[in-house]
Image (tube, rainbow, N blue to C red; front, top):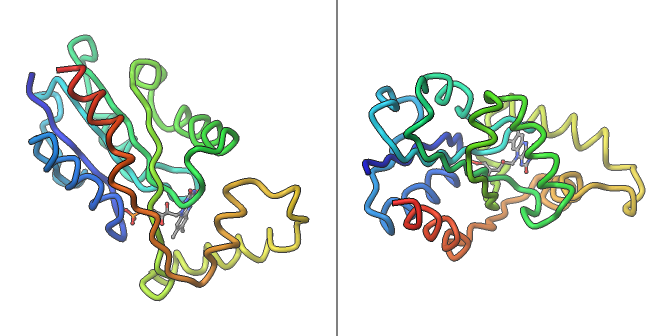
Length: 179
Ligand SMILES: Cc1cc2nc3c(=O)[nH]c(=O)nc-3n(C[C@H](O)[C@H](O)[C@H](O)COP(=O)(O)O)c2cc1C
């Protein structure tokens, strides 16, 4: 079956995961801005950075899909918050449900990875968004913080890198199982 890896990345962490996945599976990786003929592929692996709960480029890309019957879809998010935290996973998935058609959400295998952030590289608009968010959550007592808030507070104004290529193993297994 022919396969493609598509990624949505502003600052490169998702792109790094996509390129590593590409190297390990021999499947071509392209940015979502360049992925036009997605109906030509049977296996579609989409990786997107999380931005205020949205998966960068995902809905724009998957909107182009017209026949799901012969498709295998794997969706992978890359965010700062702990991707093993149950509440975080629930929040991410509930948000994803709102961004893509129900049939795609139900058909897809979904995984979550941890990326990184470097505040010195952020665009003004992103820095401002995070500053507003930080100011609105910083005084909430620790025991009431969500994993997302905690990650945001702990990394605020810093440079952190949680990229872990070994966490791609289960996705590679899923891709190979589906071939
Ligand atoms: C404006 C903004 C909003 C973000 N929102 C979230 C979020 O809702 N959940 C999360 O886990 N991480 C969030 N992050 C962190 C990014 O998902 C993380 O930095 C990721 O590695 C970015 O991927 P990229 O480097 O491929 O763009 C946010 C980062 C920025 C700058």
